[in-house]
Image (tube, rainbow, N blue to C red):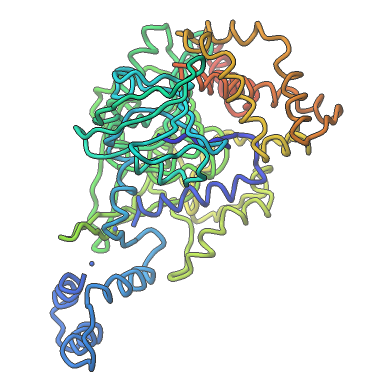
Length: 545
């Protein structure tokens, strides 16, 4: 598992670009043939005069040279599918594993979280009871060799390192490790096994009676993970919930329905789909959900798409909780994955989905013009939509009304009940430079190395905060570190960005403990205006109970 070293929540200016890149994967979630397959598909149209069918047949039987029809199909099919909607897509066999992996809930590997920020494979965390843990790999280890290949200092791309570490469960991989305090390399043999992928990145009690859950993807295990997280939070006295779907580009539709069911009351409509023949499939809550009594605030932004919008729309249209943040992406198309014998697949849009009030939230698109579709998020930034709700306009014809009289709109994402503009107040040139040049993140790696024993002993958020609170020179030490790497102190900038700098330092260090992402989010939320407003909303509701 590789952790992105530049993860941050403070760059609205770069947000549109980042979300667009993230949603390039989301297209695979929404979109999904070799010669015989293509010919068969075309011939199934039962049209002898069909030009496509005839052209393929003529090339195969009469063209002057021998042609690999399978190879031809690999070029033709993407062009064909491109003339459909932006979310229908052909996935070649060699890309299927990469596309499906985040949704399947597990992969075969060695069970470490690592980073290569300094051209060295640094183990940030070891999954408890996983293969590496059993073999004796420790957080802070540097991987020097993988089997007989030197990887340290070789400028090997991260994806190639991942490929060498992963492999079928039951197979072995030999690692040579550099470990602090030991002069010679430490050799270990790790037996690969199934490694779970958590779709819930973080869940913890964020305030008195209030829990926080961050769902990164609607994967096959999301509902089961949510049930466990809710039960754990309940045991800690949580009765209100912040459900963070920001940046969640979607995934399995059934998981969104199951999760919505947890919050809705019996017979409330969750979502319905409609195909080209106007046939509808409707999903209703069964009244068995465990969170029907919980007050909930759902956080969304322009990176929240597909299943995230189904969940947010279901709660909003049933007057269940509060949707808070910025307008969501706007994907209202349903895909069916059609597999082929060679391992490739076609993800084909087969229906549109609608929220309970009848809203289609698919944003407009032009057939064949994926570029403009992708640029939509950047256009929102240029139109000031990240900073002002008044810059967002919906047609009156798309207006709907919820059972309690709240006005909602379709036609381009979910508009939150409470709009929170992107916050750039404390983003200064100094802050952007130390983060953009990766200096801040590298400092946290070196800090974690120096304090590895103490950090590895952290077993709770309370222990983590006490440890970090005890370091009174953290920010000043970082400023000197940045100066040695070419970023001179700008005291006015530092004073303005101090809270952001300190929060990110604490968050990245927190992630380098056994708490992983809980350590990150528990330290970043104090400078996250969206989460702070969500806490405020739930506390005010408590006063009014």
